[in-house]
Length: 211
Length: 184
Image 1 (cartoon, helix red, strand yellow):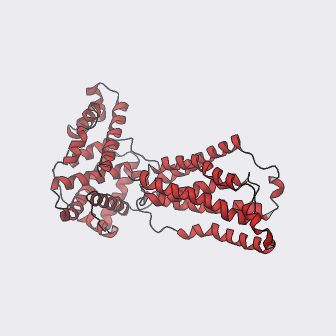
Image 2 (cartoon, helix red, strand yellow):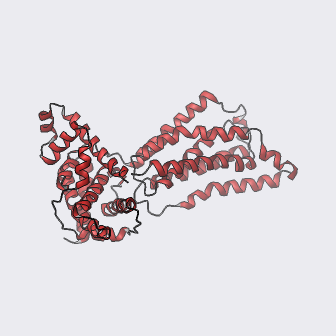
Image 3 (cartoon, one colour):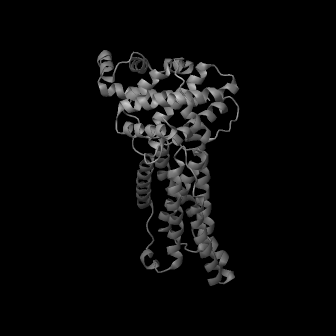
């Protein structure tokens, strides 16, 4: 086939995508988060003392950290879906660790060292490790479907960043259920769960998101 | 026409194309294909490729520009985005042959302008890939691309609805792009 002939076929194709990739990804994130919330509501519940715990800094900090990861990472995700992502503002990913670091320092100063390990181990570490990845699945699948319409400059990076966004959202959801509020617990188990999801998403992305 | 004017024209054509202006789109793709041909040929020289192999890569890039046009931000200039897609596809081409190639976006943008290489070389791989489509998809692509019929006319000839023809055309183009990828 000659190139002019291909061009005739291309210009006759009215079904080529026109919806901007940013919008596809944001819709996927909304849909995926809603679905994760439904999964949460079917199987889990918001803990009974959630409202009175809003006065407790440790409880509130779980949301600041997890959403402080998911929201800035979303801006990286939108860039990573393009063939020319430009300068990625990676420093945005420092926000969550910084806040968590301050939380850990405050915790270490406010409780005796004898109580540190009990707080770190917590009550539900295994639930945390299982449920954050499970709640990540719906948003991740949806976001990957949107990214298939994109043209990521580095597919593995796009996968990893989706992992951060989706596990951040999943962790925020799980935090409403989880009774362990200590920053020591969050800095251990939440971080491991988010790390695992991000690694897997990066691997899957490098395979699946080539275009 | 100077460089900036030309680049601006491309941007305007693509904006119009996204609004459904077929003529602008055809003009844009023809204009880009000439520069792409120059770039691809000069890069592939190192691999000792034939003009027909180079034309395959030009067509692969055009397919990607078409199917990924939603990743261009209409608020920005078109040329850097075209160059990024081109670079990606060239690097893939080298990788498929077990080679690495460093390509700077800026050098691609520069060469996009330099082209006036019209050509009627057949792309060999694309021809073979067409043969691997379903008979109906092949008939539709041939009718529209090679015989120059419109979608409506093609639909009448093949006793299909126009919508079905357009859906089949789009699927065929996606299949061609996927075929390039899996050839690696």
